[in-house]
Length: 155
Image (cartoon, rainbow, N blue to C red; front, side, top):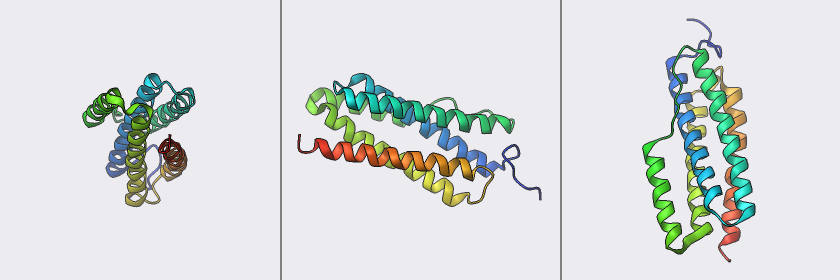
């Protein structure tokens, strides 16, 4: 049995990384869409920054998959696209930025859970350092979005 390195990831690790690529792309798409649709400049700026962060994370994970002679995920999921459509409808019906923040926080719960699962299921893999670093950024973003959402409750 050979030792796993970033250039010799086993199939299970590659599968987890592929899932994380897709959820990062979904998160990027969601943040970008909200940033483009909200009238709140502070929310738009935050979400553009978080979209960029998620794009960078997806790119880093895609490079790991490609370094293992596998084809990395290039798009988000259909379910996330459908969810963004529902958010658009709810926001258009009067929910505005508050609805977008509520749904963004739900999306953050999902990406945070995906990273937690990957770290639990694949402890000590060659990509654990990358996953831990990404998880810290995801957790910080989650908490920031949650706090921002909570501040809109009384608005």
